[in-house]
Amino acid sequence: MKTKIISLLLCVGMICACNNTQKGAGIGAGGGAVLGGIIGAIAGNTMVGAAIGGAVGAGAGAIIGKKMDKAKAEAQQVKNAQVETVKDANGLQAVKVTFDSGILFATGKADLSQSAKNSLVQFAKVLNNNKDCDIAIIGHTDSTGSDAVNQPLSVSRANSVNNYLKSCGVSSAQIKSVEGQGSTNPVADNSTEAGRKQNRRVEVYMYASQQMIQQAEAGKLQ
Image (tube, rainbow, N blue to C red; front, side, top):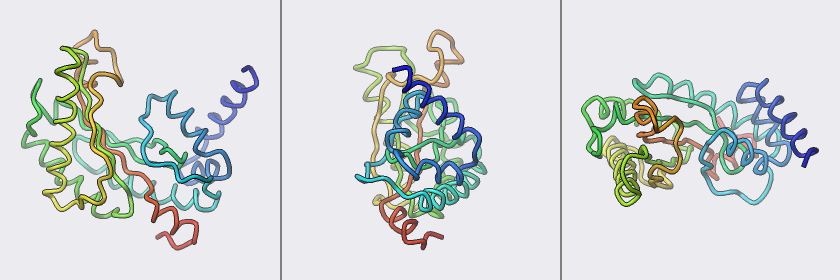
């Protein structure tokens, strides 16, 4: 157990010192899916994407990391969006975009506000510029109320974002999953008003599709 902890800390140190391209290379070099799962669990990140059944090579990982750097930079231009780098189920770089309920929804509702629609119009352009990224949409609530209320509400919020993005021209084939997690995955303290607001959110993940991985391994990913 002690050896595993030391190894994990060394890996974390190596990853934090790199940019996305370098991280993609390091992760792709070996054990990517396992390391990605461990780091994701520590960071509270939801793992997205189907594992491809084999480690992605270092070169392909670096190319995908560079691609995700560009996608992240585009997403950071979207108003009212919080953008960060995470890892997918293969340990490859992915982009997580979070919209909180103060922007997206009234309390207890799943109807998009006009400001939310404006932000999602911008975000749809990012997705359309990155059609080789697969998309996962996940809705969340705070802990107020019961699971019987929160779970379907989180699903409805995810579906509201999904439907609006598709109305803005995002292909339904690009969106691989739409789900709700109720109040089970908080990112802040539910005992405070500020924390509950952060927990009422929708997250959109952009991650490498099978096609992107194949193109990266062939050296053809632009």
